[in-house]
Image 1 (cartoon, rainbow, N blue to C red):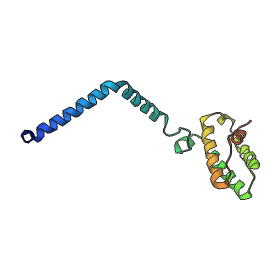
Image 2: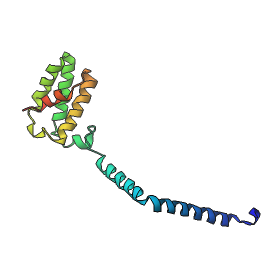
Image 3: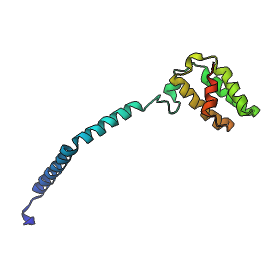
Image 4: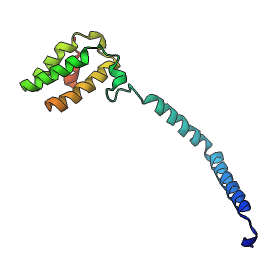
Length: 138
């Protein structure tokens, strides 16, 4: 009996069975499938350039032009002087106090992340959230 089936008939039967199988699955779980696709598209829309997780070219571009190089220079200067943590925070605060409009914005989050990374990489100092908030106190 199996010898009388051609490859074309077998292929058509296999494809039909797959369509029927996935059709039944989508019919039963269509709400979950659509919800999954909807959540996937929302998740993709939330992430991307400028999501606040790490500073990148898209988010740093909107910052005042001399702020990032000035912060970088100050952090390097603090590292060369081997400043303690409290003095480093005060040293950086002298710069951030010149930009009160950035406090409380997403750019502040970006700058905080940049300062954390630079301080860890250059000075080997990990700043806490409290210390970062001191940078922006007016």
